[in-house]
Image (cartoon, rainbow, N blue to C red; front, side, top):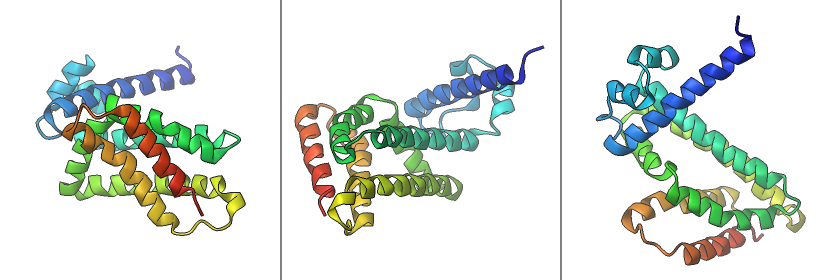
Length: 197
């Protein structure tokens, strides 16, 4: 008989398999045009098996939003582990740019946001995840500038930071050949400015 830990690991791996398949399908065809049958083919499992893990496409989107949130929070944890938080924030900019332009996150973000504009349940999920990310990143910004006194306009700074990284998905669609090196340097200057008291 399989141990409980093994069952849990296998279930997690199967959920991730479904999320990866759904991500690919949503990127290719959009949320509404991607059917559960197509997701099941992409995942290599039956539709019934997918329903064992997710109640439908909306639940899959919720899990994708949660996974994206976790990835951002893991990046924040890595930055928080550095001795110089301000420097770590600035130095992370090129990796954040690469992730936004090369990964699945950019096009998928646009698809999720388009669905959130139409679907109040998805909008609520997106807003809750965003609030948690802003809370955590805000704490990191405050910690990074602890020696310089109060950080004015923290919420405005967080919005600019969010627009900087979130906007890269839009820029990648409009200008896929953007100059990454100069963009990364400009991002580093902006992040540096956001850390000034």
